[in-house]
Structure formats: structure tokens, C-alpha cells
Image (cartoon, rainbow, N blue to C red; front, side):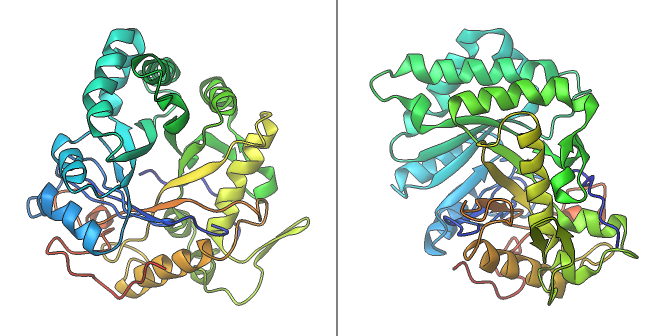
Length: 355
């Protein structure tokens, strides 16, 4: 999660609600009524077991999950329960160079982390990396790794046509946008173009979405004197930003449409944006309260179930809530420990309804 590059002066029918679960740190991210887990690694020493988490998803009626790495215990628990969970399955950043450089490694990765769990677990997206910057040493390896994993899906089980069932993408941060305000001015930064444009062309060719992490919270705390918190929390009673024919009553839509404007500018107007992370902390910093977190999540869920963004009014908004559980070993910012919808004992921190 990185600070948003959003410059404000002052789904959409959701297919379901999504949340992210990190065995170690778990983020709930919703919009299609789905739960995803973040980094199945454990950035907490008091988190539920994988079996308990999967059971909790099932009993809570949450059918979607984001795994930041292919945690075998969670995959096996999902498969054993025939839960038909729908997953974003992550490739950890550190694994990308090997998968990019060696096709056989990509084949092995798919054989170990995908094939054993289908069709009992529906892996909808494979996210090759999370928030990789163009200047990161592994940046040149992201697209080749995506291509190798796609080709591995195609070659391993041609009769299943997995490459058409599972979309291969990557999750990016808003720092790749050089311009974000007004939303119609959204554009990838000059320094990011050589990295992201070939990836976007791959996504357009394969009809796969771009995964984007969107945090109005970080935009708000970056300029709290000029951004009204009601705009960030979906509680503004009127349009705050008028951008040509599009009126924006909440910051989430503005940030999402900045991505769509950026995609249009690089010739990819048909690439969908799936919000792979969004959330609001309940403690630890400016504006981080239980009341604000509750308002953000509940209003977001309601919003994505009723409308699309102004620029893509007919497109459902898929969104994953970050996070499922608080993670007491995360940092360095104190807020990082308080993004969970639930405490590690699985008790909700505030009332929330997944429509």
C-alpha cells in the first residue's frame, strides 16, 4: 500500500463484495462481496488459522478472496470445503524474476498452485506482483512473467482453456499516475510509460483487467486542509468536482476514473480496472477512527452495488476491501495495523453489511 498521488484541491453495480486475506496480514477488500486475504505470510502473531479463516469466509457468506501469495494451507482448506471461493491469487514480488526468466519455472508454479485446486477453487485473477514501481529492479521482469504464466496456463491443460478462465494481470499503485486531477486529466507519468504501457497492451490483447490499489484515505491525509472528509467517505450531499459532463460526489470515483482516463490516453479504453485494494484505518493516524472506517466501508459497499463510476457508468465496479483482519506486526506507520474489518478474534470492529 503506497501513498496516493491524487491531487484534489480542497461498482456501479458491484458484482460481489471482495476482501483480501493475508494469512499473515489479512485485508478485507470488498465490492463484489468477496474477501481477499493479503500476504498469506503472517504479519501478526494472533491471527486465525487458515482453516478458521476459510470457515469464517463461508459462514459470513463471503465468496471472494485475495491471496497475496499462493498459501497452500488456505488453498487446500478452500478446496477441501468445496467452497467455490473466487480468488485473486498473487505472485510475490520476489518470485517474479525467476518466473520471467525460466518458462519451466512458470509451468511448475501453475502446476503447484493452480492445477491442484481447480475447479473446486475458482482462481479468477493471477496478480503478478503488487505495487511495483518502474524504478524497481524487478520492474523489467513483470511483463515477461505475466506472459510466461499465461503461456503456462495455455500449455498445461489445453482442453480446459485455463488461459481464458484465469486472467493474468498485475496490481499497481496510483503513484504510476502523473496526473489525476481532474479525473479526465488522468495519465500515466512519463517515467512510468515504458513500464506500464506494454503491460496495458498485453491486458488489452488478452482482455484482462488492470488491478489497481485505490486509497482515498491517503489522498485525504495528504491534504486534509483542502479535502473535505465527506468527499472521501461518500457522505458529501452534493457534487464536489465537476469535470466536463461528469460530476463527482466522492473521491473513490474520481480516483478510479483517473485510471480510466489514463488507459484511454494509451489506447486501451476497453481495459477494465478492478480495484484490488481499498480501505480505511480505524486507528493510528489523522482521520483514522472507527466511525470513519465504518462509514467508508459501508458507503463504499452501498455505492458499488448501485452504480458505476461517472466515466464508466454501465460497468460494474469490482473492489477488494483491505483488510480482513488487523495485523499487529505491520508497520512502520501505526495505521497499517488497523485496516482490518475484523479483530483477530473474528469479531467485527463495527457493524457492516455485505449487500
